[in-house]
View 1 (cartoon, rainbow over the protein chains, first blue to last red):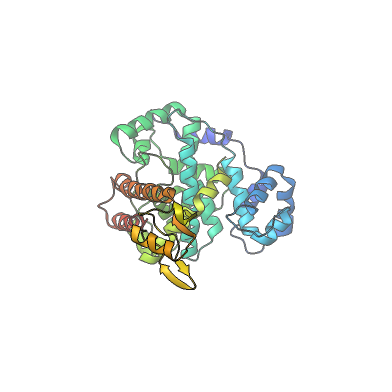
View 2 (cartoon, one colour):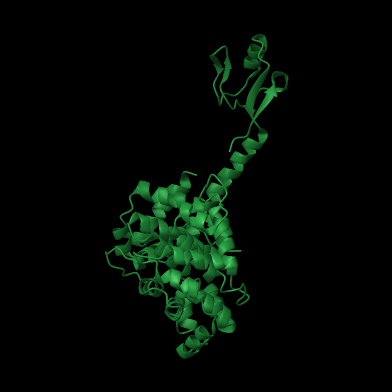
Length: 279
Length: 104
């Protein structure tokens, strides 16, 4: 049963909007001159964001030698960039309470998203691109699937049945049954939530196999998605690795040692990141 | 994940594996990883060795579990890449992941 585009737009507009602080944090990711003090003050005033920030600062992920007890301290030891990335991530994962169609694997969805975020961060670092934007875009790349699974449960259920029957890629099942796909829906939501343009594009194009040779956020998220599937981070039994673009793989220029190190690092930070972001 | 445990010599038996070099007076009598035999135990008793560090049974079991998990993850790759293993870039990524999984 196809879903009309206008219907998707309408449901997206019904979603709770992101807090103004979070939108502001995301928009400053690509900016050079940021008023860190003012933004820190806004984070500190939000109870849940502040609590999550301190939890991350004190996790073994960062291996701080002494206990971090204030937002100011967290920012001075971890850097404003890490804090901004986390706060944004928590707010977005928290915007969708668990649920959706019966066959939708909510936990698996977020595990894959966190895995993609970590891979995107590592790939961005390898390409000397902005790692914060990459982490956030990686986390959100499949957000359209969440909109479909939670707002169009009957249609989504039917689509999952089709996918299982044909053992095809999720995106092909979506196009066949729903007449649209999660990349397009995600991009629409990213626009509505005023994500930076590069992030909207990365969400829209993460399944595109024709990424050019230029280093871009889109290329990073495309490759990170495939890597996260390949590392089996979602723990979904019938997961299927989508095809990796030839030019994207060439542009990454990962030699053997670099790729093995990257796999190892991604797996090492995965469990902890999941505990922080998906609870 | 080897769990070493220090035991008195009288509890040691042939077949146990040393967790660390067994030294006496600065001299290595038996290296870490050596399997104890009746002959080496007799020799250790003669030298007046009182305790020694061996790998616990748990460690041996752990090694089996770890190896089984590694093999499972390696096999998973075939399932995960069932639609795209033959394609250029995807195939190359698969080969890298196979290398990664084969080294535990």
